[in-house]
Image 1 (tube, rainbow, N blue to C red):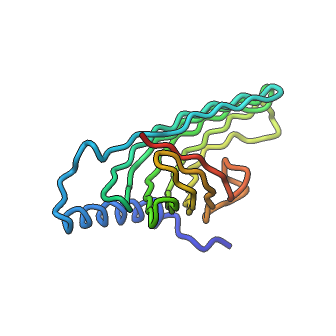
Image 2: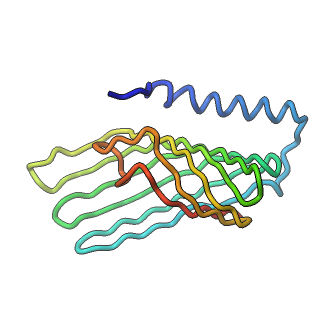
Length: 174
């Protein structure tokens, strides 16, 4: 039994994040400064016996103050298992980062991915679907690098592109 409403997550959560950030900036009488924008992302490669996977996922955050940052990212992944399937995954994410003390970073990230799998076998039907993920994470912060673990509270083992709801991460922003 699922306890979340996909419509809410797909449409209202990003709006709530946008408006709460806008109100936060107005309440602070805050003028955006380019020096507070940090870029980062992820590049991933996976190889195996007849398997290849490549990911590029750029992202950017805005550091509102020493404790709070928020941003967005894109994700593109291509995977191929020889004589079995080819997969293309595209999407985006919104992230909020809270640093209560210099060494501890807490994060929440909503990710929405479009998954397209084309099977080479007649025994499997091709798949096209959207998959949401809501990650809550904690990590050890050393400045531009954070190492930690995050948990997908919406994890669905039948649809997720991830093997597990728990995932370690290394986050780098320059």
